Amino acid sequence: MTPPVRKEAVLPEPHPAARRLPSLTGLRFAAALLVFAVHAYSMIPLADPQQKRIAQVLCDPGDLGVSFFFVLSGFVLTWSARPGQQARRFWRGRVARVYPAHLVALGFAVVGLAVTDRIPPIINELLVSTGLLVQSWDTRDIVYLGLNPVTWSLSCEMAFYLCFPLLYAGLRRLGTGGLRFLLIALVAAVWLMPTLADAVVAAEHRRWFVYIFPLTRMLEFAVGIVLARLVATGAWRGPGLPLAMLIFAGNYLIVDWLPAPTRDTAGTIVATTLLIPAAALADLHGRRSMWRGRVVQHLGEVSYAFFLIHLVVVVTAMELIGRDRMWSLPAALGLAALLLLVSYGLAVPLHRWVELPAMRLLAGRRPTRAHPRPQQAAAAQREPVPTADPR
Image 1 (cartoon, rainbow, N blue to C red):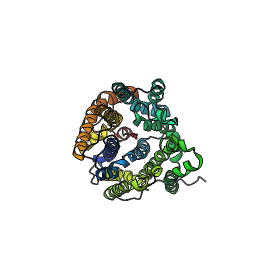
Image 2: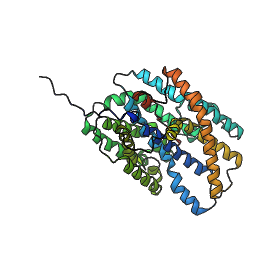
Image 3: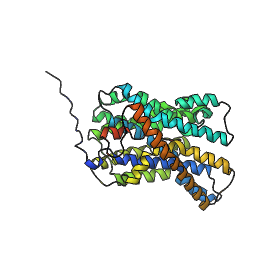
Image 4: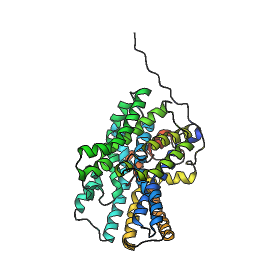
């Protein structure tokens, strides 16, 4: 007698206009814009204390865009994964996706450091660790934030990619109950990491352990994997996209009152857990979404290149202008808008002339932008970036 086979309730054929989850592409740029906002706020100090406080509430939590990217990365990779796909082929695609544009942006960062006379004394060590994207394993901030600081998050992403085939194979075996239990456990673990750091990590390394350490941040990546499995099997139960967006916005505006270690990592993890599946299901069922417009899609496509280059632009410009200068609100907004446009202007050629051709050459396939196959389009979604946190 053969054992019973567990059946999964698979989603029906998605709406033809939204099979590639374009809302996640649009949300990708929104997260990148949050990261830009926190860096602009940090580098363009306001003279008026009240205006500075308002800017802090609106912009300072922007580094939580990194957490969004980490969850999104796990979701998108799982959504596009195919059982039986060779790990070697997956890793080759990830290298093609990340490294070429990263190395070009790193060159820009070194030029910016040279122009502003800020070449660090350990430049050779930093070129190796940052170039290879292994810097987030080092506890020294001069290393994990060296050269192009936003790439510490890419270092985490590369660790995620290395583990993904094993994580995916294991989590595919879980049923609905197991996935739901694991999701709750993972979100709770994200919240508990600052407490764990206080208990077992030396004070000088706690910030690194909670915010930078790849194994700590892999919890958020695993959340994305579990969410994708719940959505794909029709087991996800959550709010629709409008309510999920409202929850995220409200959550974002209150995180500044949380303790710093929690604010920087877990502050929006629950809201992110609700938002990403809501956006995916809006696309799958053809519901209205503000994130599917042509302009938003374009911005989402270039968001990785934008993420890589924006901090180089902001820091280099402010070093040349003068870091000690205080700004009125209109002048600060005008300068931030200018830096945003310059960053976008550099991101577009980096995306078109480096990122896409490198993916075609190194991954052995031609990335398409108009009407890609569902698997290809999902695989092309931005996984990191971040941050910041850049990211």
